[in-house]
Image (cartoon, rainbow, N blue to C red; front, top):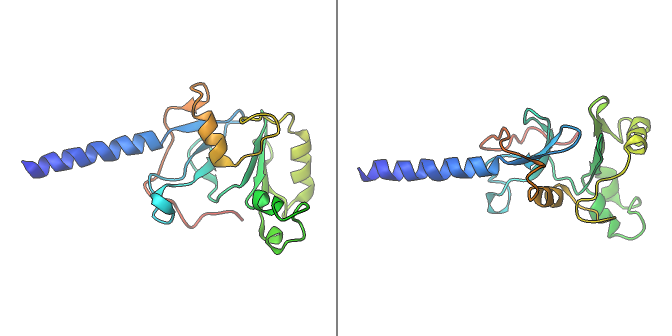
Length: 174
């Protein structure tokens, strides 16, 4: 009897955690911001990263995005841009800059990387329109900051998002 009760409590806690972790944000262009998985044993406190996802829950990128911008049609950002700004200048002379991955996404163009197609990347950013500043004008943030601010707004929340139990470490930025 006690074992059945413990299993019932464990199932309740697991399902409750899974359901609350599966909340995500619907961006204007259809992409989602949400947790990468229910738990991530490779991160502190097993707290999974917030990532950019397609509407079916498939990750667009499974990597920390340090700078993130979005408009009604387009999202773009980079994996180390915010760290590099603290180096003085624009950081482009630092060796870590060459390891940075900058991306842009628009539904009609797909996912574009700066290092693979710089012309299309720049064109998508130029055609993007007005940036939606979630933390205030000119306040730059990452995916986590954007997620935490937008999750407060019921209009931008999607009630459920596909969420694996563990992250798929075979994915990442290209």
